[in-house]
Length: 157
Image (cartoon, rainbow, N blue to C red; front, side, top):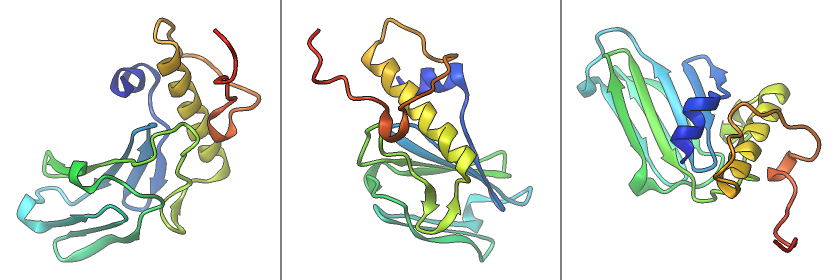
């Protein structure tokens, strides 16, 4: 379901020196620009549940402790067109309130505006899941959206 919501509503990327990262309720996506002509043999990528490391042509791109835990068995990386590495991490906590503020602990942090937009996006994604008959892809949200938005679970239907 996230894929269709993202296709219609776009993403909120956090720019970095090597590319960008963005997130949905379920996943974190990392896009790394590498020199043209890079082969898969020149890429060393280690994806753990709490740690990540990427080296290209013997040079470290990033290495560290992830902001939160992921399901390492479901993590993947691909090299596209010999110039872009795309890494997909599956979050263990898949709630709208689990909006990562940085990719690694203390590194590649989203600025206040990007963080606000990411949280709004995750809240709209949550609303889309809870109300599958509605299209929230072009919706704007204001008010109480921090932490995943208001909790309606105690309301009777």
